[in-house]
Length: 440
Image (cartoon, rainbow, N blue to C red):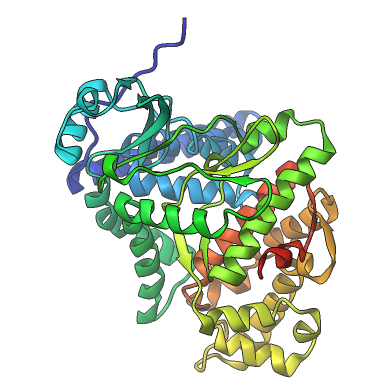
């Protein structure tokens, strides 16, 4: 017998309901700190791990029932592995797969509203219980004309709550990153725009078809077929793909050959999108990739696609070349083009941010400086952790205007950081320029 999962019959969609939910969480976190410090008074051995665990549990439980963009924020945080205490990473990583599903009546109601008929009228078979739940939708198995299908249904009210969710998160983010000046709004607009795009399933089907057709010739890479006649703005029907989530595969896999095969397909897929299509699947977390029994990679979710404009692409990849990073004049010129340095910066700020980005780019672009790169290399990872530790503790940085860098960095950095994390989980060694074979 499978474990009976609790379901959600109703999601708080009104601004007041959602705000009070987040406020309750704030009160809980305050209580956790009090508990921690009162215990600490009697037990000096107590570490902050217990506090982190309680906070992570409470934040996750709150976001989980809100779903939508609030849960998306948890997912984004779970990818910043080296920037968060371990308890948060563990808990937020769950956001990628395990969320209580919507009840069967709510599923039927959603179908009737958006596809004009109940699921049993549209498919030969439809499983009323979902097989897994993501941040803004859940997936059901179905069959039609002998084909096995996956049907993704968006949670009600998600699109409507994005702007108000972000309005609640904005003051916290502004303080955290010391964003000064009016033009910091560009970052929030970028996130809001992308989150709203993710709720547009008609756009997702279009993006899925375009990218999967453009990348179909890359070896060891597969995609589901999408069915427009059974999809709408809140429902997507696609082929059911058999495979394990990438993280599950990475944990169980003992074959170095398979790890390299999957890693190479993943790298080639991303480099081809970045350099040829100039748009990229910008949500590389393990739940968006399956690995089949022959160690082929399957990409299954194109809700978040980031277009890479030339005025960002050119300077960004010019700085991926070691000789350019080491040419101070050229380097600073590109930092202005990428809005990392600002015209109103003091000399101290220019010196500080030039050094910070020199260290960051040197490290982040190091895979591009070789013909092969081994993502299992722990020195690479410990360098990333050391750098983020150093700057997260730097009180100097907190005093400076955090409003810097082109808005395009948000999703491009997230893409690379996520890609590197997946390749590290796989312990893959890749040929850096292999993707060029598929460019002609």
